[in-house]
Image (cartoon, rainbow, N blue to C red; front, side, top):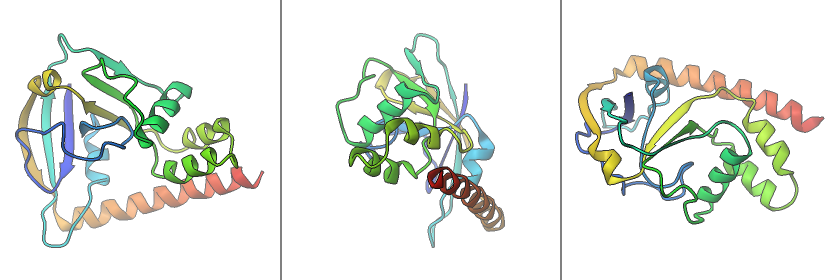
Length: 181
């Protein structure tokens, strides 16, 4: 499986214990099988280069959990965002849709009782679907081989940010219409 990771460094040996514990699929090394998504959503920071790191994952012998946009996915993300014990800790790799960052607002509204979980799931299922693959165990990390890295050019980064902004505005408009109903 060919995978990509955007960041501020060339990462030949990923650390699965680095990063937020309350991310969508819990702590691990996050990648995407979609090189275009990785390029478009790469962040910028003044004075730093942005890299796209390319890897190959040998999935043989790995226990992989594949999630779809459904109640199981929503529940898993909700629990991870609230740092509840990982329900899929027996898996080496978790693969599934990325939750749009609006989930922070949706989870707050949902847990306060102002918005039903069903509506939150419906809203999250309306936006574009991008896939993330998270390396959760040392066994999976050892099956991940670094292939190459590339520094993104500032002009490409600017173009990508404009595209992402248009996509986010469109999604926010659709969400606003749904909430108005």
